[in-house]
Length: 486
Image (cartoon, rainbow, N blue to C red; front, side, top):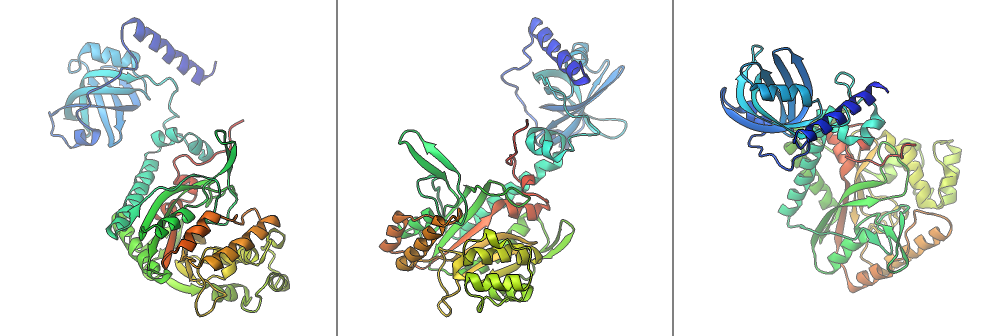
């Protein structure tokens, strides 16, 4: 039997012994009167009653120490001959281990080293841990193991909890920001009979009650626009989306999005709103508008604006006004020997443009940029630019090579929308798994009439990555998708 096996066996023995003595190692309740943070702020001599997990345990003959942690902090607890009742001191030595949850009563003291502590008068076992915590000095270092066992990651690496506390601030700030602007929060279906709202491959499931296949939502867009048709002028949702695509540092199959729709506004107004929101987030998180992300200084004081066509030409030398169909663009890419682009992967002009942009151009956008006016072939749900119908009224906020926000004027011309969805269906029939299906009910909603509307999508996970200086999306999702262990 290995060392861990011996520890487990010993703890199981203690559980049985406690039960024989009439002590429940898993009681129902403990009246916790003080949090650890309150104990740390209490006056010397104050009586306190607190509880938490014991992180360490040290016995030094007539005195013993332990570190007790709850959600608010960590405090030292002290057991001492003649000052701690003998029965309590003995119980601690015999039955309590690091990792156990315990409740303690005692008084606040300051040790010889000046550390605020609780001198224990009474201790109660609240939950006996069978598995030992990882070793104190080695902790939980392996990234895969940390993601897979997030509960241990949170126990052993307190700084991880702070990331998710900041994530909560981000979500709360966004919600407050929108509600102050009279947006109404709604929920949209996760299970959908027809998916849409983005170019993505869906997850498929089955509804036994009706013997029909359903799809997990890839976007709430088409449902939110139905609500605009129905009279919700300002509407938003913070929801989970599911896309059956690659997994890397910027992609998880399940992720969190903010989407909102604002009637009678356009994408330029949403750019101004984005700048307002960013300032509010920086204020709440106490961030400077110039900060470091993974070793790179990012400056949000002024967000530069660039047109998609200009950026492609600047980075690749290709003029998409001239290379305006699949064959012409393919020829230009081959001519300029841009090997990063997977031409075989792209089924049509919009997809090839997207490949060129994502492989060659976007990774080189480091400082924040509003990238505007994409070609119409790239987003099937966006409104054409009135001066040049080849392009759409859209912007993306790109930072450090990643898309954080996508927004555009929503297409409310039902005839144009129907034609574009027909094109999407043709692409799907040719094998494009990311093309959108026809949604007749959505078209019927548009034919009922939708006012001029601007829509906005923000990736919460990527934004939190940026604002908390985390290298991977898995660092900001409590339970990221992991391949099952063998």
